[in-house]
Image (cartoon, rainbow, N blue to C red):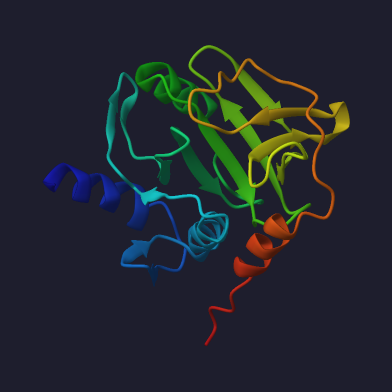
Amino acid sequence: MFLHKLISLLNGELMNRGIRTIFAGDIFRSQLEVRWALFFKALDIDYVYEKEAYPLLSGWYLPDFWLPKLNVFVEVKPWIGGVIDSARYNELAQTTGFPLLCVQGRPEKGQYTVDVYGPVRSFRFKNAYFGEAERSNKSLILVKEEERLCWEVRKGAPVSSLTRNPVRKNSEWMHLASLAARCDFSK
């Protein structure tokens, strides 16, 4: 517990200038992280905020989210000014055997990009977005629009398995999740 608090202090208070916000019993380092938590919650995707720190060769690393039903980590960064540490994300994926999704920006279509770091292979999903698979209700996929490629974000799905799954257009599920993430924190 002491180590977790120390890492939180070093990584958060000294490096992150975000506005701390309490949501669902967790103290988030930034409102952007809360927006992503709201997005996951609206999609009925369980998450654990800052589950545990991992000892890597490059030092201790504490990912923002763990999505237990999907077996993926999520790191949240602002669109502008966020430090992307690709080497570290790859190292975490290789060490744990689970992929890491690095999302940059707000959880609204067209307002974020996603990079996937896998235990074996990584993908740059520039201008990608989360969508709903057309073939199954509420199945989360990551869509690489310019190439019409998708990665189904599910437990055990290898990062190397990009497919051409059709995306459900105008998904009410995804629309409601984006709306949920637009909270006004100024009140």
